[in-house]
Amino acid sequence: MISRFSLHTASFFLLTILGLAWVTAGETPRIVSPQEIQQATKAYGPLAGKRLEAWQALVDNNINLPEETQLQNVNNFFNEVRFISDIRHWQKKDYWATPVELLATDGGDCEDYTIAKYFTLKALGVSQKKLYLTYVKAVRLNQAHMVLTYFETPRSIPLVLDNINKRILKANQRKDLVPIYSFNGDGLWLAKERGKGRSVSGGTQKLTAWNNLLKRLDVK
Image 1 (cartoon, rainbow, N blue to C red):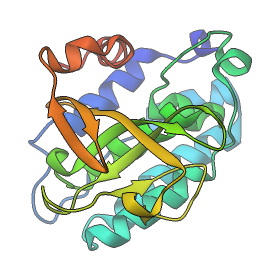
Image 2: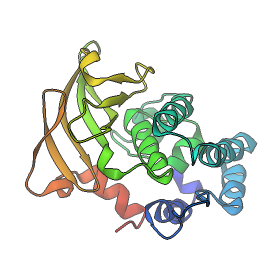
Image 3: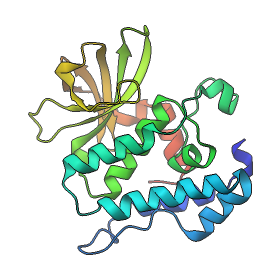
Image 4: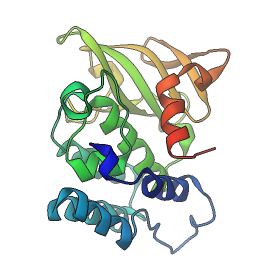
């Protein structure tokens, strides 16, 4: 259970990710501290610490690479985490885990993969304006699903970073997904055919789970 792991620790790293001061030329963001790794190791065992170290190495090794390469490497990294339902993992119907929780416990569902990919790519310098957490209907599974979509330009067909189909494909190649709505820190959009869609009044204030996640992390 997450009560064994400090959410204040997770809060520190996410505030670092969202901040701008450290994103300067020639510097590598420090997204997990030695203390955080030590805490995760104590709570969940040595492999938890190794996973957090690997996350930092992911950022270290990708900070100056082309965005296409960053997308591929981040997608591959988090898709290695085991899939587990919220009911089984957290004993809650719907729980949005932080990236620290995801990696420390080596378990999460589609929202958790998407959140971790989103914040990691932001840490690597990818503009928030290109990244959207997107709710879809997974047709073959007949259930709601979340993916990360990336728009190279505002008019581009987005790329889809997914844990079901682990290949990064353009949205128009994913006939198995029906877009519903997308969001990021800037707002909430109703989906249109393979695009970002129409802005919704009230934006992400309508997304209770997202705002609860940011509140737990003390992110403004």
